[in-house]
Amino acid sequence: MNMLEDLLSTLLMLLVACAMVIAYLSPIIGLSLVWSFLRKRAARRRMQNLFIKCGYDLRGSNERCPECNTSFERSRC
Image (cartoon, rainbow, N blue to C red; front, top):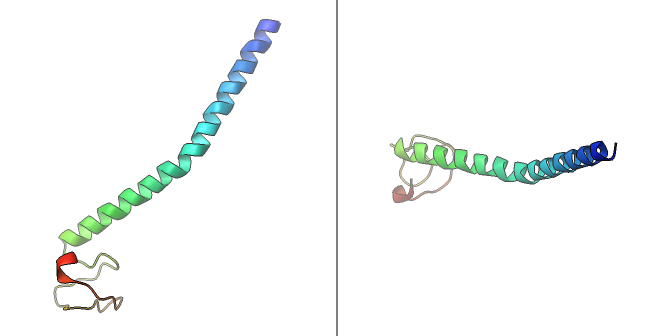
């Protein structure tokens, strides 16, 4: 009976340790996924000559986005 209790105790500690690792890593993984999505969206908008902030087509705009009224530099779009 003592061996069975030791085994169950070890399995419980392993389960708790796994749960703690998942709890600590979940926010980090979630934030890295969001950050990756935002970078890819910005790169895609830059390639399509769209304003990074709102996605408006900037081909006819000079200094200010007509959609969100944000000023921009042509070289940074």
